Amino acid sequence: MSNDETTPGPRASRHSDKPRKRRRGLKITLGVLLVLLLATGGTLYWLYSQLDGNIKGVDINKALGEDRPEKLPTSGQNLLVLGSDSRAGAENEELGGGGAVSGARSDTAMVVHIPEGRSKAVAVSIPRDTLVTRPECVKDDGSTVAGKERVMFNSVYAQVGPACVVKTVEKMSGVRVDHYLEIDFAGFKDLVDAIGGVTVDVPQDIDDKSSGLHLTAGPQKLDGTQSLAYVRTRHGIGDGSDLGRIGLQQQFLMALLSEVKSQDLLGSPTNSYKIAKSATKSLTTDSSLASLTSLAEFARSMNGVDPASMETIMLPVAYDKIDPNRVIAAEPQAGQLWKAIREDTTIPEDAKKSPATGG
Image (tube, rainbow, N blue to C red; front, side):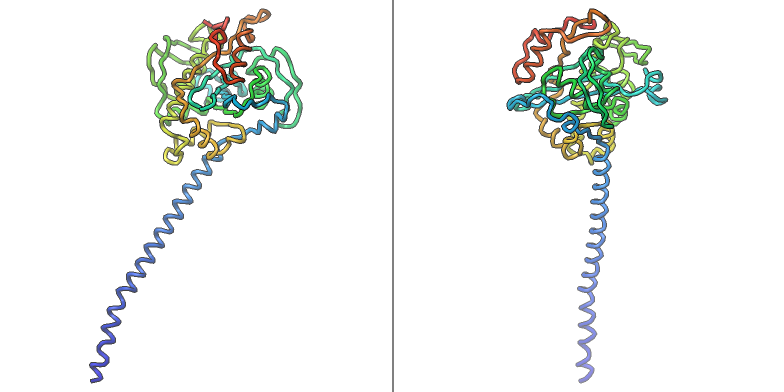
């Protein structure tokens, strides 16, 4: 009888082992998943932080204070885009056109106007050789630089910095600049290579020994080194002046923006980490855009704007009577152009015509 009474004990014990083993296995599985989840989350956060930290910011509002054009309620958005170019050092010398030039310069400057509704845009290029009046500006170290007349536009960046470039543009145009975006030309070589190249329609054969660029007319897919030479070339097209290459720079930047938009680099940066890393390392923005989140939100708000259909205009200029190697804003065309942008109205056709063409 006692054997019958004790028999069920071991059988019950054997049956209860399975739930315990299942629970133990479940705990192990959950533990592994939790570790993987934390590791993945940590990796994503590290990737995000690294990309976020690549973007450099400039506090334009603090630097300029209240001495700025009024922001009109229906004036859309105005973005100042600079292509900065430092050709100093061995690496840049190998890329063509470097070595003898020190410091960074604003080789390309465009005021991109995005009207209300953000369905279209216009980009106005300011030739780097344009003589302008530089207003009094404050440098990063707090020192004040006195205003000066008849200075080359691209010297403002080199001598005083980006905030003074914004102030100079606002003074000459009366247009309130909402955002600032600077692209480092030497840095975007890696970006162009990372996205697999940029296709441009070369308008004519280019044989420029100075920049090392040799291209035949027609559609060409340019790698990073060729792209850098393309935006730098001035001896291989037109009259050898800055005016001749402005069309190339506008064309290339629009093609680059179209490619970046098509690959949704800012919309999903962790999916294209190598490309996003190259893109963010090449950027300096105003402080309100100087984070991956803010930049991505701004980019998404521009989804309705197609860079390929963006109208590109050169600021109407005339050759300077004192120094024919320099140009000055042509009036009344320049005034009419800036007025249309300020008021978010249609730009008159006469305001798009430049007496100096660089052809």
